[in-house]
Length: 287
Image (cartoon, rainbow, N blue to C red; front, side):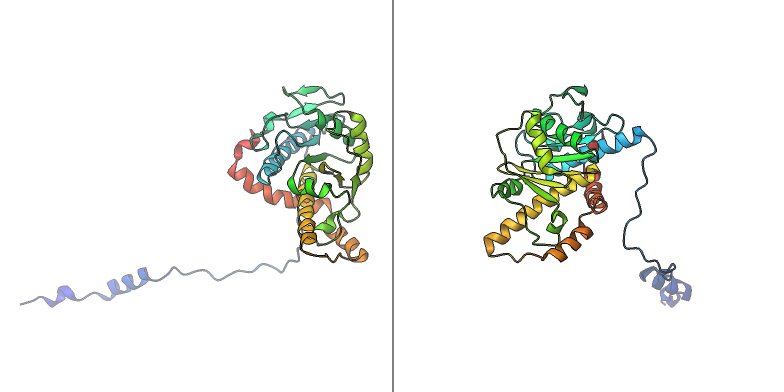
């Protein structure tokens, strides 16, 4: 005779089986007090010169790798500089001939106002010194300047004119970039660098006719992001003009939008959003 007791589950066992098959319960969502916050917290200043120097070096090395990702790495051309916080007439720059995608903090060179390398081995790009030394001398407010031979910046530069305020993004440069129309070949002397600095004036960018684009800013992050954004604005206007007759934003709205989207704080955090992913993927950039 079959023992039926062996086939009957106890109530406790059934309850256990049913509970195991159900999804785990979640605690009720706890809300905090309503908070109005539309912008980022202020970035605290670095505590000392050494910390500030390291910060600028790290952002500079990351900027080169970002430029490589964006395709701003044409041959031997291109340079970004960062003023040294202790010796303001010295700046950090990339070594000539090292691909942007491979630059680390330890590769950076410190160059003085005479174009002599005082930290690192080099060589240094002569055009980098000629252009950037003049900009850093003429603009004490500039911490960093960026120039490369990016495709859309080069293409736009051949038209010999500044950009129109066609989009919200391009308004970051509305009445805040100029034209340098005195191309004389590769910039190898500081006299031409001084003319570029004079053309830049107190703006954040300059179109170098038949050459490319250049940006400058109060932080490495701003100069680098503004370069990316200026090349993008060149690309957008080239596409718009190829498609038809673009409708520009009027002066009043373009001026207002410039004040909204053209500030260094926005550029800093835009750069930071790119930095995080790059450093995670390429941590050797800080070596």
